[in-house]
Length: 208
Image (tube, rainbow, N blue to C red; front, side, top):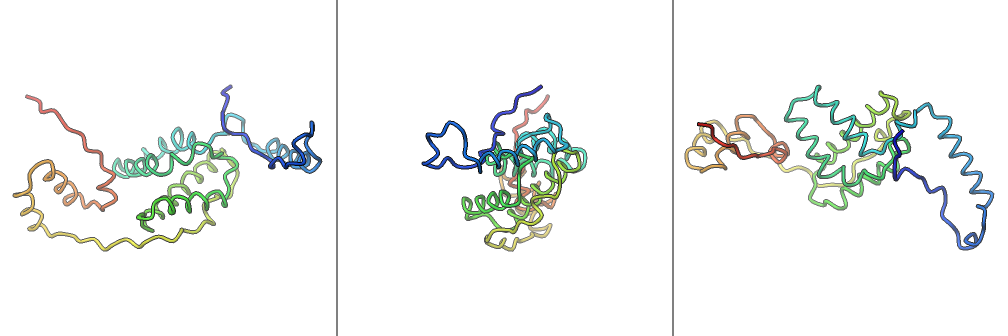
Protein backbone atom coordinates (compact mmCIF):
# COMPACT_ATOMS: atom_id res chain seq x y z
CA UNK A 1 0.00 0.00 0.00
CA UNK A 2 1.16 3.52 -0.81
CA UNK A 3 -0.07 6.53 1.14
CA UNK A 4 -1.00 9.48 -1.08
CA UNK A 5 -0.87 13.05 0.18
CA UNK A 6 -2.91 16.10 -0.88
CA UNK A 7 -5.87 14.08 -2.13
CA UNK A 8 -8.40 15.22 0.49
CA UNK A 9 -11.44 17.22 -0.58
CA UNK A 10 -12.96 20.04 1.48
CA UNK A 11 -16.70 19.42 1.33
CA UNK A 12 -17.88 22.85 2.54
CA UNK A 13 -16.52 26.01 4.17
CA UNK A 14 -16.77 26.32 7.94
CA UNK A 15 -19.30 29.06 8.60
CA UNK A 16 -18.85 31.38 11.62
CA UNK A 17 -21.98 30.02 13.33
CA UNK A 18 -20.62 26.47 13.05
CA UNK A 19 -17.16 27.05 14.54
CA UNK A 20 -18.18 25.93 18.05
CA UNK A 21 -20.06 22.82 16.94
CA UNK A 22 -18.57 19.45 17.91
CA UNK A 23 -20.36 17.75 14.99
CA UNK A 24 -20.91 19.09 11.46
CA UNK A 25 -24.39 20.39 10.62
CA UNK A 26 -26.89 18.16 8.87
CA UNK A 27 -26.32 19.59 5.36
CA UNK A 28 -22.60 18.90 5.62
CA UNK A 29 -23.25 15.32 6.81
CA UNK A 30 -25.51 14.80 3.80
CA UNK A 31 -22.81 16.13 1.49
CA UNK A 32 -20.36 13.74 3.15
CA UNK A 33 -22.66 10.80 2.44
CA UNK A 34 -22.98 11.79 -1.21
CA UNK A 35 -19.22 12.24 -1.52
CA UNK A 36 -18.39 8.87 0.06
CA UNK A 37 -21.05 7.10 -2.00
CA UNK A 38 -19.39 8.43 -5.15
CA UNK A 39 -15.96 7.29 -3.94
CA UNK A 40 -17.09 3.87 -2.69
CA UNK A 41 -19.15 3.28 -5.81
CA UNK A 42 -16.20 3.87 -8.09
CA UNK A 43 -14.64 0.89 -9.78
CA UNK A 44 -11.20 2.50 -9.56
CA UNK A 45 -8.73 0.69 -7.31
CA UNK A 46 -7.27 2.79 -4.44
CA UNK A 47 -3.76 2.54 -5.90
CA UNK A 48 -5.06 4.25 -9.04
CA UNK A 49 -6.19 7.32 -7.12
CA UNK A 50 -3.37 9.54 -8.39
CA UNK A 51 -2.97 13.26 -8.74
CA UNK A 52 -2.56 14.72 -12.21
CA UNK A 53 1.19 15.22 -11.82
CA UNK A 54 1.87 11.62 -10.75
CA UNK A 55 -0.19 10.16 -13.58
CA UNK A 56 1.34 12.38 -16.25
CA UNK A 57 4.93 11.72 -15.18
CA UNK A 58 4.63 8.01 -14.35
CA UNK A 59 2.09 6.83 -16.94
CA UNK A 60 1.41 9.31 -19.73
CA UNK A 61 4.92 10.59 -20.53
CA UNK A 62 6.43 7.07 -20.63
CA UNK A 63 3.57 5.92 -22.87
CA UNK A 64 4.18 8.54 -25.58
CA UNK A 65 7.85 7.62 -25.99
CA UNK A 66 6.87 4.57 -28.05
CA UNK A 67 4.28 6.39 -30.18
CA UNK A 68 5.98 9.67 -31.09
CA UNK A 69 9.32 10.85 -32.40
CA UNK A 70 12.03 11.90 -29.97
CA UNK A 71 11.57 15.54 -31.00
CA UNK A 72 7.82 15.45 -30.33
CA UNK A 73 8.34 13.78 -26.97
CA UNK A 74 10.92 16.40 -26.03
CA UNK A 75 8.48 19.16 -27.02
CA UNK A 76 5.75 17.61 -24.84
CA UNK A 77 8.14 17.30 -21.91
CA UNK A 78 9.19 20.92 -22.36
CA UNK A 79 5.62 22.23 -22.11
CA UNK A 80 4.81 19.83 -19.29
CA UNK A 81 7.81 20.85 -17.16
CA UNK A 82 7.57 24.57 -17.90
CA UNK A 83 3.80 25.19 -17.86
CA UNK A 84 1.59 22.32 -16.71
CA UNK A 85 3.60 20.50 -14.03
CA UNK A 86 3.94 23.49 -11.63
CA UNK A 87 0.12 23.79 -11.59
CA UNK A 88 -0.86 20.11 -11.39
CA UNK A 89 0.50 18.68 -8.15
CA UNK A 90 -2.60 19.23 -6.00
CA UNK A 91 -5.15 18.35 -8.73
CA UNK A 92 -6.82 14.97 -8.29
CA UNK A 93 -7.00 12.93 -11.48
CA UNK A 94 -10.23 11.23 -10.40
CA UNK A 95 -12.08 14.42 -9.40
CA UNK A 96 -10.73 16.69 -12.13
CA UNK A 97 -13.69 18.39 -13.83
CA UNK A 98 -14.38 20.65 -16.80
CA UNK A 99 -14.67 23.80 -14.61
CA UNK A 100 -11.29 22.98 -13.05
CA UNK A 101 -9.80 22.51 -16.53
CA UNK A 102 -11.24 25.82 -17.73
CA UNK A 103 -9.84 27.66 -14.70
CA UNK A 104 -6.45 26.06 -15.34
CA UNK A 105 -6.36 27.23 -18.97
CA UNK A 106 -7.59 30.70 -18.00
CA UNK A 107 -4.90 30.96 -15.32
CA UNK A 108 -2.15 29.97 -17.77
CA UNK A 109 -3.33 32.58 -20.28
CA UNK A 110 -3.64 35.28 -17.62
CA UNK A 111 -0.16 34.64 -16.21
CA UNK A 112 1.43 34.43 -19.67
CA UNK A 113 0.03 37.36 -21.71
CA UNK A 114 2.61 36.82 -24.46
CA UNK A 115 1.49 33.21 -25.03
CA UNK A 116 -0.16 32.63 -28.41
CA UNK A 117 -3.41 30.85 -29.13
CA UNK A 118 -1.44 28.11 -30.89
CA UNK A 119 0.50 27.34 -27.70
CA UNK A 120 -2.69 27.30 -25.62
CA UNK A 121 -4.23 24.89 -28.13
CA UNK A 122 -1.17 22.64 -27.75
CA UNK A 123 -1.52 22.68 -23.95
CA UNK A 124 -5.22 21.85 -24.21
CA UNK A 125 -4.42 18.95 -26.56
CA UNK A 126 -1.83 17.63 -24.10
CA UNK A 127 -4.31 17.72 -21.23
CA UNK A 128 -6.92 16.00 -23.38
CA UNK A 129 -4.42 13.25 -24.27
CA UNK A 130 -3.55 12.76 -20.60
CA UNK A 131 -7.18 12.24 -19.60
CA UNK A 132 -7.90 10.10 -22.65
CA UNK A 133 -5.19 7.69 -21.50
CA UNK A 134 -6.46 7.85 -17.90
CA UNK A 135 -9.93 6.79 -19.08
CA UNK A 136 -8.52 4.07 -21.34
CA UNK A 137 -6.46 2.57 -18.52
CA UNK A 138 -9.23 2.79 -15.90
CA UNK A 139 -7.66 5.51 -13.75
CA UNK A 140 -10.90 7.53 -13.95
CA UNK A 141 -14.37 7.38 -15.45
CA UNK A 142 -15.28 9.29 -18.60
CA UNK A 143 -16.07 11.61 -20.20
CA UNK A 144 -12.91 13.55 -20.93
CA UNK A 145 -13.11 16.80 -18.83
CA UNK A 146 -11.08 18.78 -21.40
CA UNK A 147 -13.54 18.23 -24.24
CA UNK A 148 -15.97 21.03 -23.33
CA UNK A 149 -13.37 23.67 -22.43
CA UNK A 150 -12.78 26.79 -24.53
CA UNK A 151 -9.49 28.45 -25.37
CA UNK A 152 -8.94 31.71 -23.50
CA UNK A 153 -8.45 34.93 -25.45
CA UNK A 154 -4.84 35.13 -26.66
CA UNK A 155 -2.84 36.80 -29.40
CA UNK A 156 -2.57 35.15 -32.79
CA UNK A 157 0.74 33.67 -33.91
CA UNK A 158 2.88 35.87 -36.11
CA UNK A 159 3.63 34.75 -39.65
CA UNK A 160 6.99 33.01 -39.91
CA UNK A 161 9.50 33.40 -42.73
CA UNK A 162 11.12 30.42 -44.47
CA UNK A 163 14.54 31.00 -46.03
CA UNK A 164 15.55 29.30 -49.26
CA UNK A 165 18.58 26.99 -49.46
CA UNK A 166 20.94 29.59 -50.90
CA UNK A 167 20.18 32.02 -48.09
CA UNK A 168 20.69 29.32 -45.44
CA UNK A 169 24.04 28.31 -46.92
CA UNK A 170 25.14 31.95 -47.06
CA UNK A 171 24.27 32.36 -43.39
CA UNK A 172 26.21 29.23 -42.43
CA UNK A 173 29.35 30.57 -44.16
CA UNK A 174 29.48 33.73 -42.04
CA UNK A 175 27.84 32.86 -38.70
CA UNK A 176 30.18 31.47 -35.99
CA UNK A 177 29.49 28.51 -33.73
CA UNK A 178 27.36 27.62 -31.86
CA UNK A 179 24.87 29.78 -33.77
CA UNK A 180 25.82 27.99 -37.00
CA UNK A 181 24.68 24.65 -35.57
CA UNK A 182 21.40 26.15 -34.38
CA UNK A 183 20.67 27.60 -37.81
CA UNK A 184 21.58 24.36 -39.57
CA UNK A 185 19.40 22.24 -37.27
CA UNK A 186 16.42 24.57 -37.65
CA UNK A 187 16.73 24.92 -41.42
CA UNK A 188 17.51 21.36 -42.48
CA UNK A 189 15.11 19.71 -40.02
CA UNK A 190 12.29 22.12 -40.92
CA UNK A 191 11.61 22.99 -37.29
CA UNK A 192 8.98 25.46 -36.17
CA UNK A 193 9.78 28.18 -33.65
CA UNK A 194 8.22 26.31 -30.74
CA UNK A 195 10.16 23.15 -31.65
CA UNK A 196 13.42 25.11 -31.77
CA UNK A 197 12.68 26.53 -28.32
CA UNK A 198 12.10 23.00 -27.04
CA UNK A 199 15.46 21.65 -28.19
CA UNK A 200 17.98 20.70 -25.54
CA UNK A 201 21.48 21.85 -26.42
CA UNK A 202 24.32 19.95 -24.74
CA UNK A 203 28.06 20.46 -25.31
CA UNK A 204 29.89 17.43 -26.61
CA UNK A 205 33.44 16.35 -25.95
CA UNK A 206 35.48 15.56 -29.04
CA UNK A 207 37.03 12.09 -29.09
CA UNK A 208 40.54 11.55 -30.48
